[in-house]
Length: 395
Image (cartoon, rainbow, N blue to C red; front, top):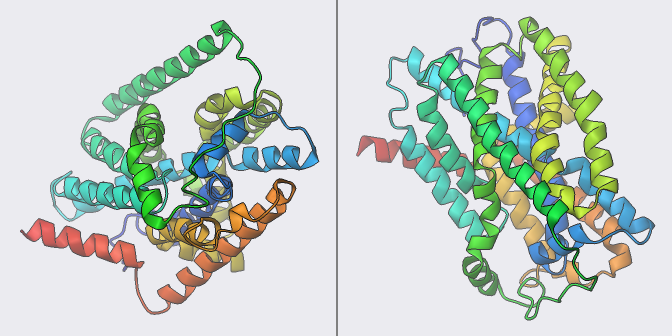
């Protein structure tokens, strides 16, 4: 995407500091590769999402299972939260750009949301049942209109949505305390198993048949998503990426790294799989805000980025394409319609196998982003999305 001085991420209150834009791209890149850190365990499970959910509830019995649990907990929810906040920041940037250009807001944005929903629907059916784009499309449509309200009204919406979300988590915890303990027993194998033995079309039909189950998370976290979108917009306008945002960044890092991160790790490792909703949807978003603050602080202190920062920035500039690509590459490697590697490795080799697949996929995605941006200004999915939007707006 072409960036000029008209971009609010470049201009803002300090037009001479282009590092703000680099920080945004780096954060998007971190969010993309970080979400794969959670999803990769789904992709490398021989039974896909079904097997992954079964393993979440299982208690570790050896060193490898403890290592798996620890690695999962490091990524669980943090980068999903970060990606959600970054979508909110992107929405605030688009609104500011529309205002400077004298265009009404939200104007034609509902078309953008509709196209994002279509992207998510295709991604869900064809590639990944854990797609987040459909949920983000619905959330973005709601928040686009909320951003036209006053700051005070937006604050009330944040408080209301967080109240609804925390109430749902509290009711879930109450159900755990009052429920009768289940009889111990092994999980039921998925038979037939479309992940290991089915064709590409078999998996498409499987996702469509169980869409209500696979889309339950999207509905569950809608209040939280709305709140995080609005928080992202508020943080951007508050100058979290500039020198004036130092106090905000320090508070976010203290709350996230000093309090939320240790709590998240302890609950995740010692609390069992039943507490995944608490760690993933209550504690982890606070850690996500700390990660945002840390990258913003780094960008203020050191405007230049090194090799890793440049690669992450490239992934961030092609975030939508890379999100879809990483799930597609991992699916080809792991599922039965591709190389079928997930079913070929013994359970005791699951951790090193998963780490290896993750590194391979990230390398492919980073190479793609680097090579693509040497010739084009935006990713292929981003280009198609923008071209479709322009055609719809003209018509």
